[in-house]
Image (cartoon, rainbow, N blue to C red):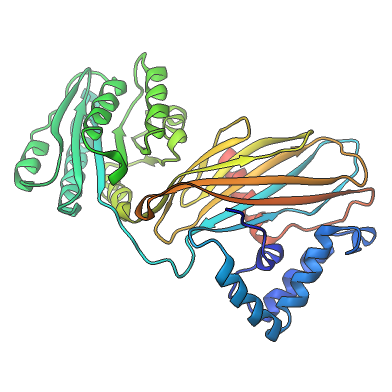
Length: 410
């Protein structure tokens, strides 16, 4: 399905923007073009800007446009793309361009939920003894209380080897499961692969296509000698629509490894400083799981020669660096009404004057509640290369996004 940029996307405003917001946005966009580029006949990007402002600044034309837009736009995912500028100077040096993508369910999309299939993979090595393990057990009990009758849960504890505390199944006897969790004791070293493999084996006992699938790892340390096996396992799980999330407890956990572990599925890596934070953090992981709207969201960029992805960062619903392979990025899930926001930092090599740079953006996603797999949305970003480089201030939303990126890099 094609999703061409609409007038609201061009101005970078929401569909419910006020007339004053539209005016300010149009003036800001207009300032991004040097005088020599402000010709709607020869510059398609400027023509789109002029058309957008002409329609949206008129209440009558805007009302008609809104009616047409509601009838034609994607019914499954709203996509908004903004760039730090629309004109690139013909310089002899490299330049950076920032692109912000915002993905969210349409406003009128009804809430739908699926049952969840969740595995808790708990580090019970000797270093977890005491408050950490007790808080983890308390948090696991709350998870058991929160799940519904159609949900599937499995609980795995690991040290040197994995132990299945509760095999995958529905909650027919909550008290028995809580009793098993209470009986966990700390012992042994930390071999995360053993726990992850046992967790995935349990999750795979059911038809994964009928559930929202999430594996949650809780650990306080480094794994020993099996990092590569863990990462390979995470990549395979992502291909089965199983999202990995990881919670690192205390100061000794390997944040780089856990970030790599959750990256293939677009999951979240969380730092927990004090044992008392474990319960609230795990509850946050579980809350709204069944309301995941889209999963296995992927972005493919058709980058012209001389343009490369320098960095990619998911900013919402949580911050996570995203790795790219052949200009393909795995973004994870769109949860409930929350947006998925991505910032791209593109490196642009010197380009010839007058070049019209077109960057196709292809989004693919699965919508489990609607039974839609590999649903496709296409849009594109257009840039003009000019001798006269406009002295442009990027839109405020992109300035804030770049500030978040720089903070994460520190």
